[in-house]
Length: 403
Ligand code: PMT
Figure 1 (cartoon, rainbow, N blue to C red):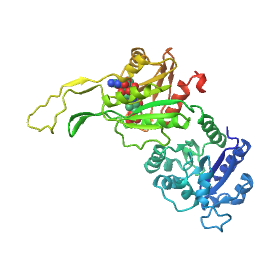
Figure 2 (cartoon, rainbow, N blue to C red):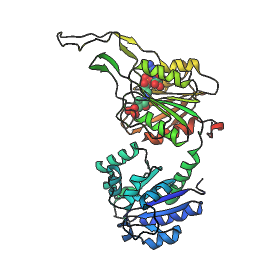
Figure 3 (cartoon, helix red, strand yellow):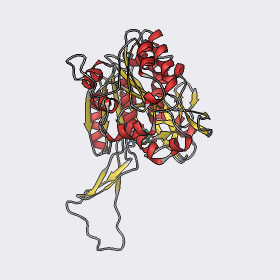
C-alpha cells in the first residue's frame, strides 16, 4: 500500500535517530518516496548526508539555507506529503507540536501540514511517563495524530522500561496498514453518536453524565480515516469536531439526539451508538431558576425514548447496528441482553468501574460481543486504538473486513 506514497520523515535528536535510516530504507523498498527534515540536534547523531543518500532526496534542516527553488520550503514540503512521520520523536518535539511552536524547519512544517501525522516517541522511561509528556501525547492524539507507542526494554541510558523506539518494520507496517484502510469505506455512510445528553431542570441546571465524547469522537476519526462519509451526532463535549466529517450535529437532550439519529440512520450502512443517553428527563422544566426555599426538592423524572431500540426495530437489511454497554456489574450478561432486546449486530461492553476504562479517560477496556455469541476481549488501549479494533471486528467481507 506504500507504493507511490509520499512520506515526510521528521528526525529529531535522540540516540534512536540511527534507526530512522532503516525506516527510510524500508519505506523506499516498499515503493514510497521519502523526504527527510532533520532538527539541528538530530544532525549530532546522524549526518544529513546519510539521509540524503538513503532517501535519494535533498535533506532539509535549516529554515534559512540558500533558496534552491521558488517554493516556500516548509509549505511545499507540508503540501507534498501524503503522511508525515516523526521518528524518533523526542519529548521536546512532542511538547512543541502540542503547543504549536514553530521555531525550526520541522516544527514549522508540522504546523503547515494537513496530512495524517504519526509520532513514534523514543526517550528515557521516566521522561516518557512524565505527566507533561503524557499530556502532550494526549493533546496530539485528541487532534488526530497517531502515536506509535514505544517498546519497553533496556534503554540506551541504562534504564529499563517503555521508551525504546518501536522497531522500524513495525513503524512501516503501521503506515502500510493506514494506507490500506484509507479507501476501505469510501462512499459508505457511517453514523456515530458521542458524549452524554443533558436534560434541563430549569434555565440554569440540568441532569447529565460523565461522558466526555472521547470514545465516540475516536470512532468518528477512525471512520474518516477509512474514507467513510461520517455523520457525528454529539452531546455537549469539550472536544473539537474531528477533521474530515461530512456532517457534525450538536445536540443537547435525548429527544434532540433521537430526532437527528433517526433522520441520519435511514441512509447509513453502519450506526455506532457510543453516546451515553440519559434514560430519564425531568417531567417539567421550570420556566425560571428554582429558588432554594425548601430543605428538600423532588424532581419527577420521565423515561426518555430508547433510541438504539428504535434503530433496532427499524433496522434495514445490510445495516450494521452497534451499541455500547456501560456497566458496573454483570458486564457480559447485561451486554448480551442488550444485543437481543435492541436487535443489535454487535455491542461494545465496558466495565466502567475498572481503572482506565469508561467515562472521561483516554483509554478503555472493552469486550466486543457479536450476535452469534462470540466474545472478543481487548486489553487496556487508547480509545483511538479501540476504535480501530472495533471497525476491524464489525466490518463484513464486502467492506474489507473479516466478518
Ligand atoms: O465519552 P467517554 O468519556 O469517552 O466515555 C465513553 C462511554 C463510557 C460513554 C462509552 O464507552 C459507552 O459505554 N457508551 C454507552 C453508555 C451508555 O449509555 O450505556 P447504556 O448501557 O446505558 O446504553 C446502552 C446503549 O443504548 C448505548 O449504545 C446507548 O447509546 C443506547 N441508548 C441508551 C439509552 C437511551 N435512552 N437511548 C439509547 O440509544
